[in-house]
Amino acid sequence: MEALKTIANISGYPGLYRILKPGRSGVIVEAIDEKKAKTMMGPQARVSVLNDISMYVDRPEADQDSQSVPLGDILMLVADAFGDELPINSKVDGSELADFMEQVLPDYDRERVRDTDIRKLISWYTILRQFAPESFDKPVEEPVAEVVAAETEVNETVVAEEKKAGE
Image 1 (cartoon, one colour):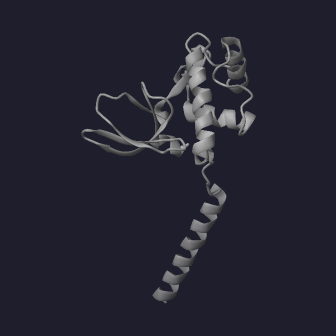
Image 2 (tube, rainbow, N blue to C red):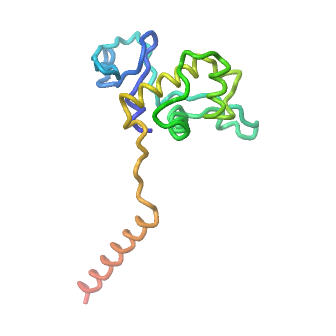
Image 3 (cartoon, rainbow, N blue to C red):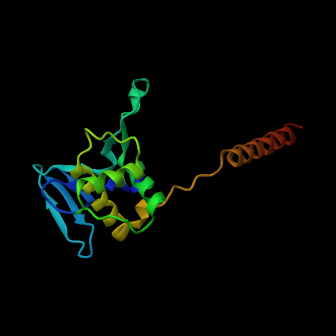
């Protein structure tokens, strides 16, 4: 999810923010809500870009390299499972949060992922779905076979033209 590179959570401030312009004296952000208020956050603000956030998973020892899953992947799993409307909100109790997370990411680490983390996930998903639905657009990629075929055709044309020019 490319869009998550410009969306951030700011510690101590509710909601999500779009990073508009980073600078030496801080960063200019725009609230992702109906008001779209712009604010300057100083260098003391703890800004966490969503693209850099991940959740712990409990996987076998052999798979040590992937002990966490990027937030973007988790958001896409939620979107695939539930679409626009979640069957839960961020104010429910811990057991319902655990049941929700179990449906989305069955191997999440129950010891290291706290209820507050799941609440943030639900809140952020709701905000992104409502005010930044482009975050869930899947990148359009050309099939590899078509790219190779097109390159081969161009190369064959160049070779044929070079042969004609040499004759």
